[in-house]
Image (cartoon, rainbow, N blue to C red; front, top):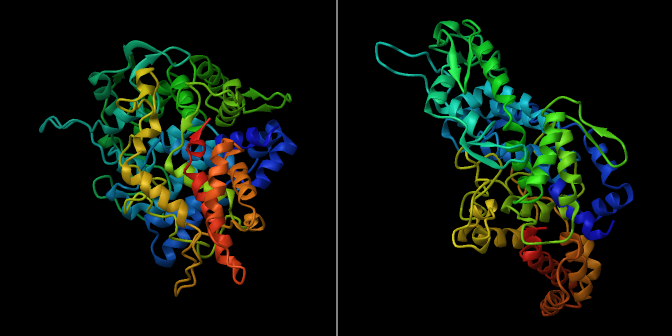
Length: 524
């Protein structure tokens, strides 16, 4: 396996590789790496968020600190990358002001994402459907049966989105994810399904005047039959009638939705787009969807990944990453994807990460450096902070007036490319090697990262440019670009009497220029 192939694979499967990560993959091989990753357990969010709340009331930006700590330093990289992908499909955004007081409870959702990232997608949908924070976000918490005296009908928000975004999509699909020219549902289906999601709120309390305590804030919503729509509920050509239990109605409805033939290709294609390529072939989607339904996948070395249960995410991840289209290094017009600003920045930081592990207690080791990137004209993107339930970008987005659009290709991540975000990313990669900023409470508000391994090359501009290129792109920059970069590096003066500052500026220039190059921005 070449250095380029190793970097390419790790950019698909992780938040970015360091030189040591590349060497390790070259030694172990992809199959062994995947088999090892699926055994790694995550560090829970909830325990840390409860602890932070007791210190100074957990805020949204502290939740993002915990995300960045896992993305950069987590050993369970495949799980973290899959969890982030799923967070962009099954969205609960902390931008919703109603969730500001519910940050602790949000930790349950984050742990569900981590657990089911290499667990079971169908189980994730079941969990979030009864999640209090999802109930607040998509407004089915406190949803009541139809009131005949006022004509008020059950809220339809969650019923619509659980079909459109989490399970079946808008169009009927074949097994390869190709549209069949028929809508999956209509307004009557939404109304019928909305009746299912009635009579749900916080557990162990009153429905109409719920009290939130430690007895109910971290557990699923409970059903209150007297507020649940009675009788049969009909949608999508089926009728469920399981009595007066709201939870039983929800489970029956989800059982039907999650066995719909659209689910496997609909979710499989989006995961391929998040990890590998924006425009996978129908055959690629079909192969992964088949694994989604089978629940297991056999690696080339004969090892089987997955439980054999439908919706197994470990099997799906293995199928996506080892597919011939994922590993084909021949770049054509359809291959690859623009990487989102968050993934690009994570790659830069992780490639030069300091020695650190994910904390399990005590103050968060670093805070503030990579939080609120969606503000102040910077990346306009951060984890768990999309502007709405449709994520930062749509999987079918086409850049207006683009050649890709003329070719019938989608360009999802281009929806994130505002002028402000482009400038903000450039500023961020040029400045994130800040000195530690220790506040009065002893917390480190700067990000811990190190480009020191490049220092020994600072006096050889071409060697420095080449090494930075190998680490960040696997050596994708053409020779003329490397030569031009080396010339720029050479212009940075090194004072022989105090060389440290000049050496550092040369290293930072090399990293920043490559991290803003097309070869780095585009994953192919």
